[in-house]
Amino acid sequence: MRKVAILGGKGNAALVAAAMEHARRMGAMEWEVAGFLNDREPVGSIIDMFPVIGKTTDAKRLLDEGYWFVNAILRIDGNHERIAMFENLGIPDDRLATFVHPMAYVAPSVQLGAGCIIMPNVSMSPGTKLGKGCLMMVGSMMGHDNIVGDFCHIAAQAAVGSYLTIGKGVHIGLNATVKENLSIGDFATLGAGAVLTKNMGENEIWAGNPAKFLRYVR
Ligand SMILES: CC(C)(COP(=O)(O)OP(=O)(O)OC[C@H]1O[C@@H](n2cnc3c(N)ncnc32)[C@H](O)[C@@H]1OP(=O)(O)O)[C@@H](O)C(=O)NCCC(=O)NCCS
Image (cartoon, rainbow, N blue to C red; front, side, top):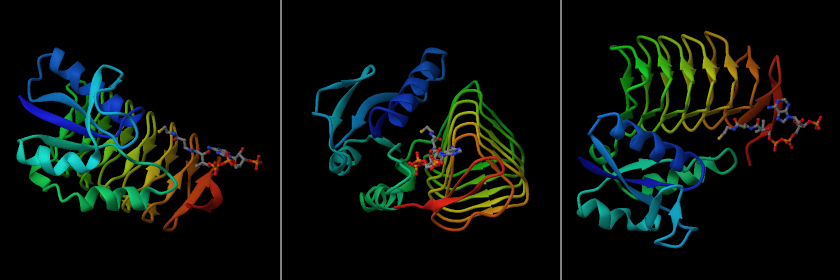
């Protein structure tokens, strides 16, 4: 089994760790969670059931020690800086852990970038391509023939339509719906429960049903 260090802590990282451990207990023996890299919690502290094993800058050392990595540090305001921080760590794509939980459906023609995480009860339809480091959270649905940029976060139960072009670092909120044939710019965010019927520009935050422009990311 390959040891994984997950960047982050409470929130997405702990959810990913739990899903990886759940998969291992189901018999999927590819990944073993070693713990978190976290700049806020002390090394040795426990988050859910795994330890903090270092700061994010320890990734370089752990790389030499043979670990694999998942980036789960994403947030709506400041995502640009957080993704840049991760990219500056210089972890090669072939050391990013790509994980598909055994309870997910991923059509055979889907292409997953390095470090993508596909959580339980996700459904991904044919012909869609995800960039690297994307998180498809529990129960989210990705339609067919989409092109999705790096480090996108599709929150739990979101339903994403088809023939979409989605930029880098995009967040689709909890239980949101995206109509087909749209484009979404880099670092845009769709609020929880929103229904998107129009294109969203770069750095824009939209919310509501039908979704309307709310503000720009900070
Ligand atoms: C859209 C969002 C980013 C806006 O955050 P924000 O800028 O802090 O917004 P505020 O809470 O200050 O709300 C501003 C206004 O927008 C409204 N609003 C906020 N989120 C909304 C949503 N999802 N749907 C409809 N209206 C929303 C608020 O009611 C408020 O309206 P008012 O001015 O009439 O009172 C945030 O509310 C959201 O939905 N985040 C996604 C949550 C999510 O998906 N989490 C996933 C788990 S990781």
